[in-house]
Image (cartoon, rainbow, N blue to C red; front, top):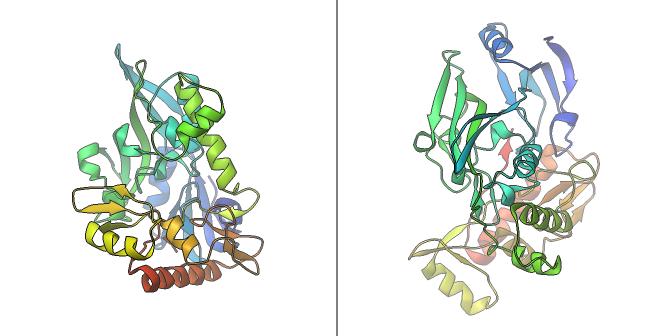
Amino acid sequence: MQIQQNISLKPFNTFGIDAKAKYFVSVANIHDLKDILSLQDYPKKLILGGGSNMLLTKNFDGLVIHINLKGIDIVSENEDFVFVKAKAGENWHDFVLWCINNDFGGVENLSLIPGNVGTAPIQNIGAYGIELKDTFESCEAMSLKTNTLQTFTKTDCDFGYRNSIFKQHAKGQYIITNVVFKLTKHNHKLNINYGTIASQLEFMQITNPTIQDISKAVINIRESKLPNPKAIGNSGSFFKNPVISKTLFNTLVENFKDIPSYPVSDNEVKVPAGWLIEKAGFKGKRFGDYGVHKNQALVLVNYGDAKGSDILNLSKLIQKTIQRIFGISIETEVNIL
């Protein structure tokens, strides 16, 4: 373990922003993590996982701690379920593929989501009708205050839509070191009724899908809509889908008859932020080295050497425009640093 100086964070964030860390260290075990957190010489610390849910708008004048804990293990199992522990530094999609290859069900709809396992519970990642909380059993996290490990149950995590305790009153207080998932061994509960999964399976000529088929369908859909961060810098969906009142929705339908929605409760619906952004004219718009992706309006992209501040300003312009046209506030999924 070695602390380096003046390190570019470009390889460590999927936006490909060339911000620099004054100090940088990659941590591969709990012992080293405790040692690093105990150092008093670096009062400013930034915890970095897969770098997929962040937008760097400036250099970091402190110590960046890259969480590189690796390993996937079966903790326990019974006739119906298996409990799998994945360490925080595991790539999320690689973990999903590991589960699928072992015929463990529950995370197949979450295929190809960028990022690492350790950051997945923070925003309760979700896609195609499934959220992380649906298979989450517990996680272990290091307290930055006491340098001790603490276990969080699903109840402790207080999961919500793209939300958790780690984004609210425990924000910045813990580093998730591993996550335990409860997955099915057979009789998998398949979810194919969200988005275009059913039509993609039909296109694939599959009538009795397996979890492997669903994963492949999701991968096909995502690859057709979303740019690969290795080719075009991005963080996936930049904005959350807003939840609005049915009263507001009914008013909007009068002027926008094709506005889509998904029921949330008796009084609320969820509206796709991508539809709002596209309707506002931003889909495919390019501003030099940055812009909105041509196939998915939810995705802001870095085409080359954009600054984080450029992308931040674009996101603010989109938010103001959506508010002006629709009277809807859309929030960012991405952490702005």
